Length: 164
Image (tube, rainbow, N blue to C red; front, side, top):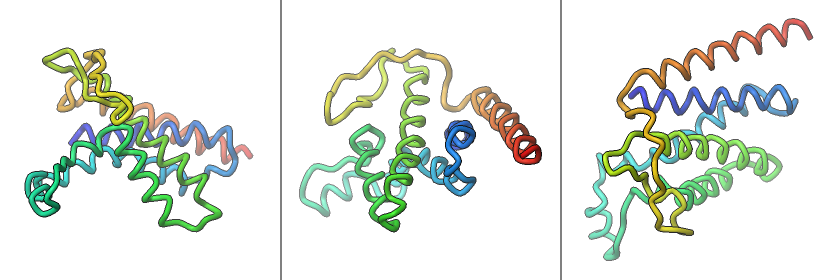
């Protein structure tokens, strides 16, 4: 679970930093960025509903793992954007996309036995880019670092709003 929390904290940090530059990014919009960070991990639904069961039901090839790619994330963001009022769509799309992109980028840093990552740019490319091999998703250190950064930004934001 440290992996999912780290993704949320990274998106919180990015959203908070952007809120310093763009006045319209309120805490509610930062939460949207955090929700976007969960989009690629929607693939975990395969634990409850395996891909082969869905493939048999649809009578066509199917794999949940497609959600953990750029193409799958874009489709998921588009579905999320369709659920909000039209005046909010651009902002919601940008922040959901920010969260999903930060998730995919952080996963490119994972340690991989093969030295290659997942096909992040699918369906544009089937190439498995090399990983940077910084950490395992089960290690607590990235989550601790993300929590410290998020905590510092939280405090700095509170101090900024008091001085205004």
